[in-house]
Length: 462
Length: 125
Image 1 (tube, rainbow over the protein chains, first blue to last red):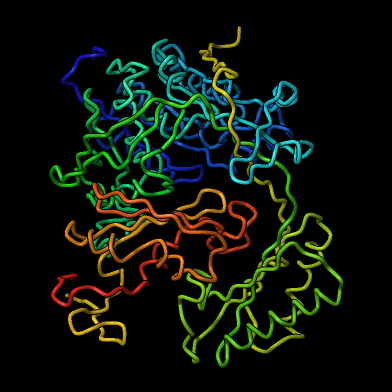
Image 2 (cartoon, helix red, strand yellow; image 1 turned 30 degrees about the vertical axis):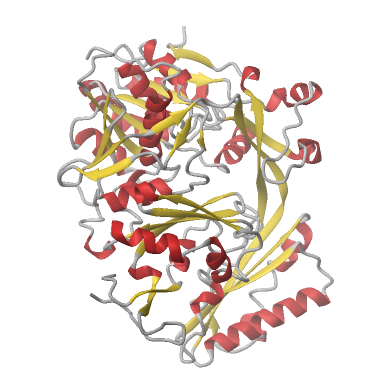
């Protein structure tokens, strides 16, 4: 393939929509039909703090661990077919992730046939004191608070890098590119920039690639998964095809999936994904550009094919978003199931009893939250009154506090109710509810010129 | 087809009351403590009805007691869609939330419960 040639299609497949997504999906994307690139998204807002915790226990950890055995399964076919992989599985330790993948390649005898690239420079945890000393307040985008307020409790701090460092790694010939906190959309956009030779100010082309990235980043959620329209007629959800973007140099692209797979690609399924986690649609901000989602058109283009065209973009901003995580406090959620008769009334009585016991114990919580699963847990009061003869209701009660003590004591208050509370309680097989540490998310902005992404390739240890 | 058209006090002789579910589909997600709900017209000609009837004010009233902040609406006529941001909808959001739906995944169908008045002859099947 010649980068830059105009009438060519580049196929970019989505293999994972989050850390924990279907393990068979990337295998099927590689083996189920022709693709040029496989992107895999692993990072959500809270994922970075989990990985940071793992790295603090073991300096070689801090990335999506299951990515390595997955690569062991994928690499032979990927090398055979000349498919390049782009993934942010590196988390807070992309270099270690890349080294482990290299070891796998070595064990498979493939290390001479592929180059592993690493994108770093997103991790600013160690630079925070310096940045703040130089006047960057890193105020919380949502609350306006300066970062000072939580400085001592910070767990991780990463800027969202865009597509360009990945493009650099592709230019250097990397076949597998492992990044830290790169935007989900950048993983799909970068191959397009590389293949079509788009420029840094081709705003509408970059925006088009970003829209393709938004469609790819949640895996099957664009191809019939979690799709409300005619959901019962969506074929073979046991084997859903994940999205494949067929991109053209002019920024237009087709969303499709491999033949013979389940799921459905329709204007409806793709539109649902376009609106997922959407803010102001005319100002969808990424490090690479600002996308106007009100500009594009979608049209059916054959069976399980939707064509997207006409995306307009504007220049990128001067800032990068920073994802900071910090220790907030503790929470615990306990459940009990109450059976007919009077299931809902029993569950409500049990809630009153627990709350009264917590009060008499003098325990203080930031919040006590009760839901009745089967009655109001998902739609609240909109669900209306339940059937008075309802078969069962699950009481679900949760607490949150800054200190661990009250939350631990709460976790002892669920089980006793089975014998000393309202009748017909069951469903307490799992022991007392677990007390979870809350690591909260702090979004902020940092000027772009503070960040220098680095690109490296991994070679064998001498 | 399959339309739940019910005459009620609010519906006049020239209109019928339908559930939003009959006109639209939806997807929702989260950004911190804010839920977003995108609703999409089932057919392009139904979009103007959504734009007219499903205002930010009506959506705020629909979710009264369920959200703490305001509701902001954005229009995407090119996709036949409206996007609503519901502030303070997720009990603190992310890891802080004690809610089952901490990530706002089913605010989508909660909004589709809304009932609106449409012209009696509008085909919403």
